[in-house]
Length: 51
Image 1: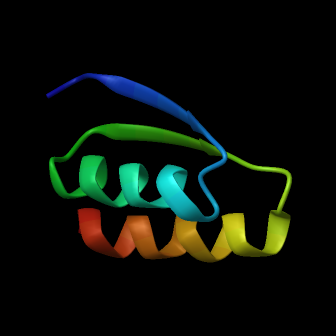
Image 2 (image 1 turned 180 degrees about the horizontal axis):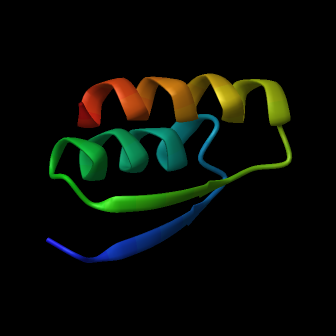
């Protein structure tokens, strides 16, 4: 699959849930959030899911 999805507000809540769901479905994600610390945590978690 070559679809790329940009998710804003991906550090918490619905944005995070969406990122996790799409990662499990092997989408390529661009995760964006003002909350840098939680955004980085979520980004690392999504990378582990995709492996």
